[in-house]
Image (cartoon, rainbow, N blue to C red):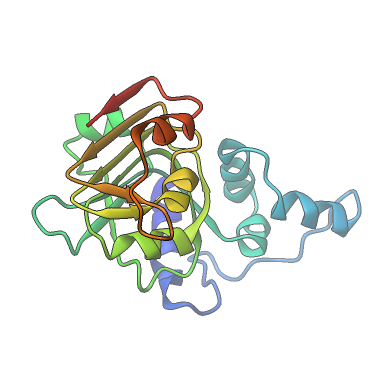
Length: 195
């Protein structure tokens, strides 16, 4: 199922109608009102629930095309390449990142639900990631050699437990630097902070 999901994601990066490998989707006949099903599709409660719905019926992905991404990062050798992985970050590291899928943010037309780890080390990716995020529930967040706005930082770290900030600055909209106490206050689940 993982291979067909990845191939479906790659196919619909052309920004057109979703073309499925098995053919077009079929009309569904639900045992309850279509408005209820539509509401469920547009308002998934958890990433796990949404993924199960999308894997069981194409309608849910077509109604609300979200890609669940446990890990999103740049290639440390070539900063222009971005990877996402369907495995949890520790499983991905055990596989030496061979399970990762290369993506081009400029061609990606769907929203991302990031659930595990997010590392940003390219300044140009911050506005792209901000526009692509459906929800950001990362537990591990790292920024390296970039400048990030405080509002973007809060959006990406709401669920973070571990944060790494290396050679990066966090500023308000008026370009004043955010103090460390404000950074710590803005992350309610913080357990570890590396500076």
